[in-house]
Image (cartoon, rainbow, N blue to C red; front, side, top):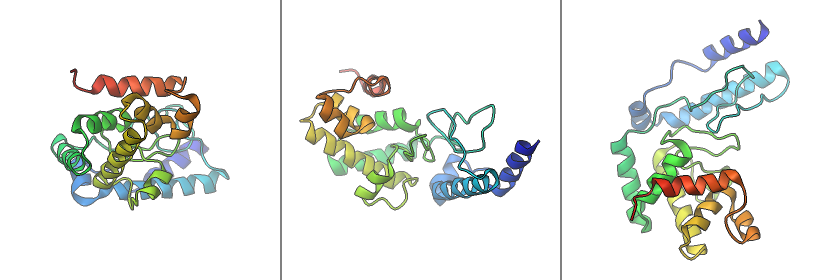
Length: 205
């Protein structure tokens, strides 16, 4: 009964139903969504006396522990036309292949601009806060800023690993330090599946 009351209170506190993907794109709703999640978290922590445990799925919205965890972010994928435009612009600016950027976005977030992972990665290309700081990202939930930073990171990793896409993708997922220590793709199931997943999304030569 107590958990039900908490959940009901948070629904009211979180505000009206989330907007469609087009509204997010047109009004910058993604940043607002992040603020709503942060506000809800504070309320949960104040009632429970501690921070709630994040849901176990890859795409998560931290919340009160419930029998059914959140399985997808609370927003729709970005419309293809807008996503393709942003990818094309970033790819041309950084001299990268659009197909690679698109494949990473698909693997990372399913093209959902408000995606947040259990580790704190944010937005379309799942930027960690340190990465956002590194590339001067003001709002990681803004599709343009997120894609631009993610593209620059991919370019940086490809340059470091002499064009070896497997190593660059592994570093994008597990971090450069782990790849360097292992001298290759780390023996981590998540990272290995990630590299294979992105590669599978690329056009066949």
